[in-house]
Length: 455
Image (cartoon, rainbow, N blue to C red; front, side):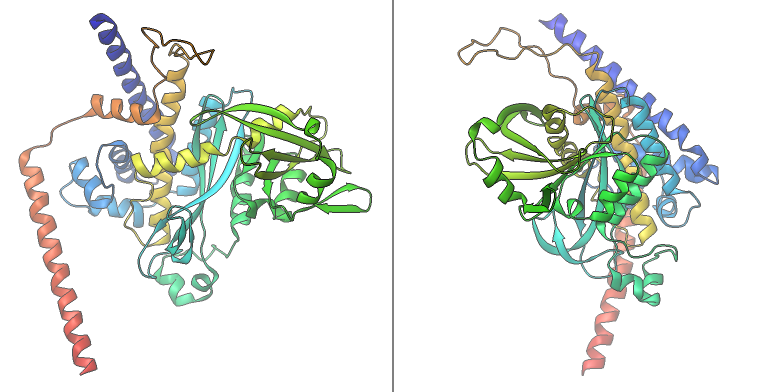
């Protein structure tokens, strides 16, 4: 037993070294995005800080972890350094595609997530529904795309949604650091921008948006159909579909009229983030040979979910293929979970548009390193034993599950850990107290002035 544990530990340590090597490869591929060497070097420090075990990942904590005396270099990297974060996003996407692109099914899963922010001095911040909070709150929403395959997945694209009132006011736009070329776009339009880049580098096979707002966008559907992209779009029960020439019905009416018989439904089981999930599925053709209505029914509650599907001409289609695509919503949600909990996706304390987007892009890079390493490790890990019958007794040794993204991160920390001098951390304690004292002084002066004006 001790020998087996030692062998497993040695193999795990090797995967940590693979993660370091993947970080080096991705960092080198990012070199053309930077105009100067100093920001390029600082980006490596920032990425290492994002993969670290810091509980809060912001400019101060990452700078201290990197060994810098002040956060100036980190803040300059996000705010003022000359580097192309849009180009960097493309490099990250191609890095992920190069590692995961040999899978039989490749899906671009779209969804949005956000970060709660107080006040109105952050680019994109306003009161809106925040999926991260599960309610209406003040914050910033960002549209993300996950490159999802059966072997692994990673977030590869992001666009910050900006409200029209921030863009229409030139003074406020300048205060938030929003470039002149940025115009108002709806969330489906932001998603289309991400997909357009994936079309350009041929890194997409099929699209699976997670929420109904994308399914309602005829502009987005037309874009995908024009570019020969298959999709499985979640739509509402009121979405109208033409099932015969001149006959258009709501999705729920179609189910009631054409799918009432139990024989029209088939129970399919598909792997998800928590294991196998079984639902009843049915599909129905439309007047178009490339379009279908796919319906999912919960086996216990009978709750229905509707999907409008497009299959490019000449491509074969089966019910199971559409079901597998429809069930690939969880990778983008898992990407949010990993990004927020392990890589500081929603930890940034910046307010300007460029700084916020750059933090997101660098977080995508850190997540991509660990996600790719976990996918590679999965091919080298024996499959853990699972039961085949309900009454089967557990084996003496069920084996090990494949290394997860979180475990790869821990192994990366293990093989890269270094101890900085005590004087370094004492300096930072002094620096934070000095900075906070200065901030407190100006805060109290502002309050005194307000009292004088209201007296």
